[in-house]
Image (cartoon, rainbow, N blue to C red; front, side):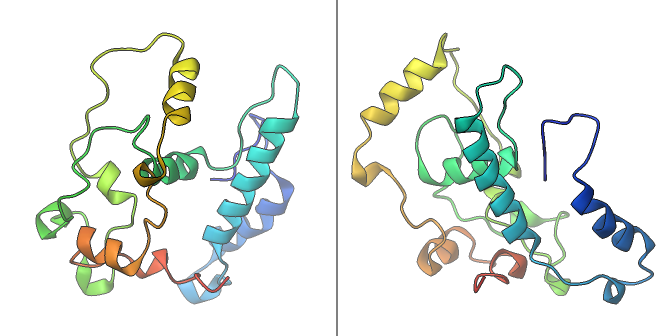
Length: 170
């Protein structure tokens, strides 16, 4: 979740945390951190770097999956065809989650746990096509607040993982 352009190396700041997790005998031995906030910050930094670097090896770093799910939740462009209006209920979480211990779906579950279909035809030169589609978007086609209480309860009547909102105050 903390990707860089180094390919075969990892950021030295993460080594101590990895050792702490690997040597922990129980969860209490691991210092509580807001990994969600750290992933978000790394993704912001990666987007900034990706826009400013001019090297042939430049690329988007951070957590591209987070960016992808973020765009799926907000824009009707470039996302798989999934019935997001159908509530994500018990039949969707059967065998995958254990509600008794609070392991409920995350907001990304609707994209990962449902049957997905992508476009039936390939678009050559997708950048100009996506640019044109974004340029023609109207304000009412963008989902501005996908994580509101009303949206969450309508899409996930069983509830979502407490991990999704635990660090909201940060």
